Image 1 (tube, rainbow, N blue to C red):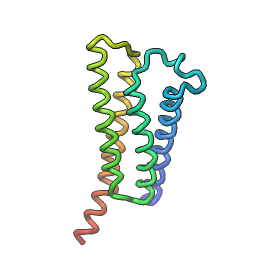
Image 2 (cartoon, one colour; image 1 turned 45 degrees about the vertical axis):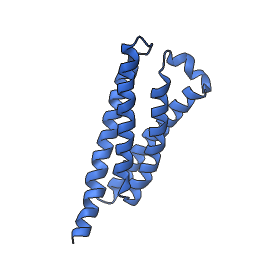
Image 3 (spheres, helix red, strand yellow; image 1 turned 90 degrees about the vertical axis):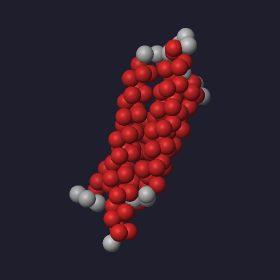
Image 4 (cartoon, rainbow, N blue to C red; image 1 turned 60 degrees about the horizontal axis):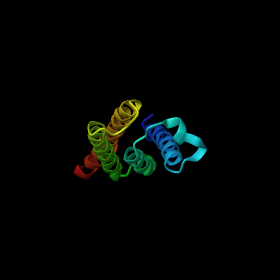
Length: 134
């Protein structure tokens, strides 16, 4: 079970990353008529999701190979998404148009990324610190 856990995490993070990559690139490049379906999207939020999707894919490799930088990469993604969330609040407080579902989606994405970061820290980084201390 202990050996299967990193692979399970990598599959989850890869799926999350591929879905995010598909949705964000579809919006950025207007593939499959997604822009019309999404309504009033906020472009800098979409770009932060795009950047995070690439970081998710790299971090899934980090989970499988137990790389210490996995937690740092996911932490950077959490910071990017949190910064975009603050920017979203500034955007709609200054009268910008947006979809209300964006707020819920950002809260979910930030929370999921934070959970991935914490798991990476405690399963990889802490484990490698123990190995160094021995």
